[in-house]
Amino acid sequence: MVVTINSVDDNATVTVNGTIRLTKTFSNTPQSVDIAPYLVPGANTVQFELSNTGQGWSYSWRMAANGTIVIDDSCAVWNTYPACVNDNQAVGVVYRHTVTVNSQP
Image (tube, rainbow, N blue to C red):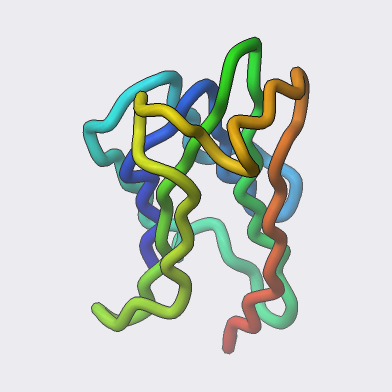
């Protein structure tokens, strides 16, 4: 299972069961992590979180299992106006998406 952050404005993290497995700061160069080694048998929590330090914010990320995209989520176009949510200027955590992934032993 692979999580890819395609673009982020300003900062993004991917956590698996509470441990950060990928971070990305203001970039539109894709970066991925294979989260399969971090999954335990049963229910696992995978979270994508975006924080903003000022101005607008945007993101694009996806999760794929066995080559099939199961989540493909984005808001706005990286580094362009208007940003997400009508150019929302909120600071701090502005977006969080949490999923449960069930893994077989």
